[in-house]
Length: 433
Ligand code: AMP
Ligand code: ZN
Image 1 (cartoon, protein in one colour):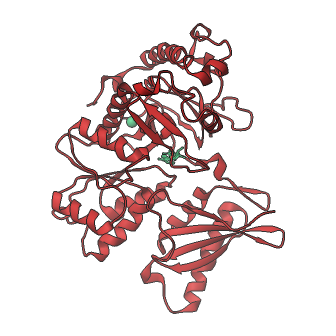
Image 2 (cartoon, rainbow, N blue to C red):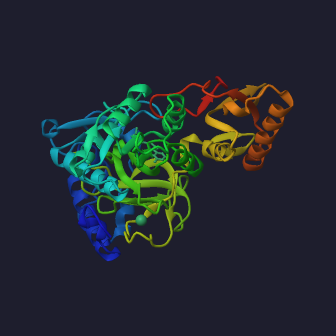
Image 3 (cartoon, rainbow, N blue to C red):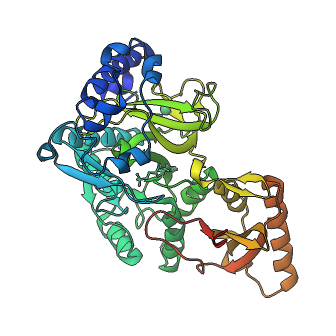
């Protein structure tokens, strides 16, 4: 196994040992911050004798970060910090994360490891199409790519024509792109008359996609449309940003860098650990961060550990594709629905185009769900019978998956709103009460 960092080769026993030592020092450091000095309430590094003792530590929520805004989780004076990022505010106000120089360096190393694992090498030309600024996806990938030794193009988000020109002029081989944008991007390439199978014009071989939930169907679609391999990338600002978990060439779950993060999967209601391999909320502890360690952070993201060893040889455990956020659950007529279930059904249908929107509405006192679906140009025909047949088919498949019958509107391709950053998949028009 060719690795970027020796830590990728650690055995289970070695990883466990590293985690225990680092967990104890994380507690030691965290105690220096005003928040954890209170929240740890007498728990010390000596309280941690085995990894299972992590459960003696308090959980940390987004609300804790807000309550302690801006400096309450810092272990050292703010003048020792060299960087600040903020969460993209997937829900509510942003939260702010600080990094020391060591934290920035460690993060770059983790990112370089991820890119290397996906087959990126020095000499590759990397175009970072994620937003820069406070969002971690810009500078996170940027520093990782430079550390790895790639030509790094900070293209940022948007301006599709310029992106395509840069890619073709510079012979870009690797992209970082948000999945919803990647789907749209493929259409734009077609319009500009570029065939992604023509490797002389389109030398891109690898795309790193992440930052928002997406299904396996969307990944396959991106791979086919853009003629490349797409690797799932998971991270969150509270855990640095990207570089937390990443797919290896086997594309069967994302290896979490367990020398840097301790992951638990808990039942979001009881907060008890779920049986191995079952879905629950990801809870994470930073093991190496010095400026702003975070203990047992409740990510609200739902996933599970993929059981068994990975064929690549790394023993760092794998997180399954994120099923969605605990906060994303929609309840319609008493039935729990996750947007990703809808995406999975839609994207498996060849007539469906690149975008969709879930609208929640009220009819009298009853909540209803409406799904607006973009249909590919060639299927958007004049014949009403054909269209209404397709509409019925989509509706039936959705009903079979969701157990409630949504309304389905077929719309022309490119007609639904696109976002420059993370896609907004659900529009709630139910109003108050
Ligand atoms: P932020 O801290 O603003 O970058 O947002 C982090 C959140 O984005 C995570 O908690 C997830 O909900 C979501 N996210 C990031 N990467 C992925 C991914 N690969 N798949 C699904 N959701 C993701
Ligand atoms: Zn692997």
